[in-house]
Image (cartoon, rainbow, N blue to C red):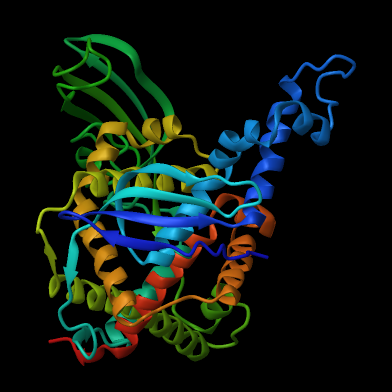
Length: 439
């Protein structure tokens, strides 16, 4: 269960967008920090008569004094307390603060202040009652027929073509081929009984096109030019001739749109009409979900566009923090799927620089959006309760299949409170937005 730290935070504005954040660290957090600091140090302490790691805390304090633990204790507890203090003061800080201890007295509370730089002030436009276009969730006959055709294609089977049938894109041919450049055969240019789907782009450009219009039993000389950037440097940019023998031609045979087809596709229905009704219902739900997501995004963006910043230029620290956070979230999502960054770059043919550039392009709008949502939460005096924060911990623990204690250890109550404020600001904007039919 998350305990919200009582920081008694007070922010005093200074020159420009600078200021001083004063706050306290309560005794409960200090004691926890002292225990953590002692556990870190006890294995390093040599006291005659005691083995390393076996000295008691009382013995340590008697010999070295509690003050010997203060620096490590402060380092251990400061991040969570500072996050909570920023939340309590309802400010948005740019970059790293300069932390200055004022009074680290025995028994606490410890008094700290931080010299901070604030994000630009936001001047909100209208954020309630805005009109936003919304797509209809009605499913047209064309959309339903297209989905049924997709289902038919999924049930299609490759069957031998009839005698005299000619190859078309989408057909499969079983071929022998033997390629040569200037009459000289080359490695990898020969195969037998190779199954090729025409139009798949599996072979170099022009190869598959020249088999279209032919039939089983045909011999075809396919003339192509290897791309200049071809992986085999000795073939790059050169003209080649492939002697191709078509052994078999197979065509996709789609099942008839009837009751039997319906039961094959979905064993919970007994007729085509039932399948159509069920498919239409699913399409309608998918459209409604997509439409709602787009409506919410558009409503938020409209509020962001109607708001202004003072000054207009976003601090580089905010942009860089966003880029780093988005990149780390991206890698965390990959890791949850068992994919390491280098594997991702290899599979996609991209690089770290390209990913950073992609994250950089959206950073200004993401940062401004966050600042605007914080301003909405501030205007609406949103303040998450301890129960709401604990519910969020439970939700995250369930979502990531980890213990609640692990969530509490990795995310401070201050950050959880901030995230809830942002979500409530989104809910306020969306729930008050008026949907209008898309023109």
